[in-house]
Image (cartoon, rainbow, N blue to C red; front, top):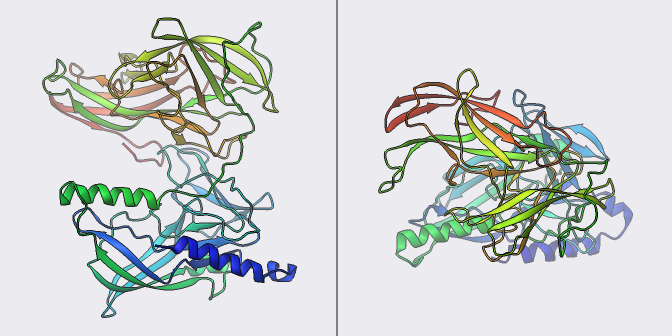
Length: 502
């Protein structure tokens, strides 16, 4: 499909024609644009259906569109405002209900060759979706984050569409992921729903597009048709969700790795510090030990845990290897309000974790997991206390100095390998480090525990090795109720406020 190239060409032509300030001022805040009005979609018959990427985009006018979604606490609903000239402007009621994007922004209708409707739904729109510059006078970079996905306990998100930039309207953020249509000819009509047309003052011409759609089966996906099609479909979905053309806005603090261990007297200067906070455990489930291992007869309570940095300064750690050992000396660095490095402190060690699912360097004593009784006394402690730091989840991008484009977003970007002599691990402001329940150590042995009420405690910085602005918010609890019998244990997980996620 050449929709993106066509889109850029069309937009470039339009920009060239609109040379006067009067014409520029007349640009709509947003307009709906089709890269091509004749689209062919691949169908993976045994792999899940079609990737519903019609090559349609919302394009911002002369000013960026920025929205902030927040909730005061887990007991409060998510609310959103548009930011206009630095000031909040109320959005239409019901437009922000979660962190998935602007709800019911679009309506998509697809009819077959007989005129029968085969798809007729409202769709969520993510301002941070896949997109690019659409005219020569548009800014070269976009400062806004990528995507509208969220951790269950996210507190704040920033969505934005840079002036003159586009965002794909039919990607999967907040929408159904499995759409299937038989081979054939279709007509698709995409419109901006009236409440948003009125709010953003989008005219009739700029708020609707009609396309001819051809659905064609992918005949041979390779690797055996069924499995190959599943893999090919998954890759096509991932490609549709990838934001392209975005050069990140530089972070205020440029934490470049040191070439050697720090020298001079260690100190903890006054000024901004990171603030580590835990969120309640989630992804909670009962599992059994792997067959054929000594743990096969055991029951486990598995969970995911997130520790995040509320800032206003990033957590920056360097590890330098002790010669011939699977151990590194760890140093934490400090920065002033202008981002200049002003001090350091030896803050413990990093160790090599050879276990499957890890195989990287962990900072020791970053967090501690405990299972507490109903009276909140410790019953079981997880053996996991060491972690590789990575900005895996956006928790609150509205806090001061939040980095909307963290560079180390997975465990392969900063955790090193067995031959590493040094590593730098960073937890940026606004981001959290999540270890999911399938990782080794993310569970408690509950084989001998009685049924009843317990609490999963996630504690950041348990030994206070890291220097932070506050340690009063380092602990989070999640209530769980164990039941069942041996090898058939059950767990009930009550909601936390309005968040009903096990």
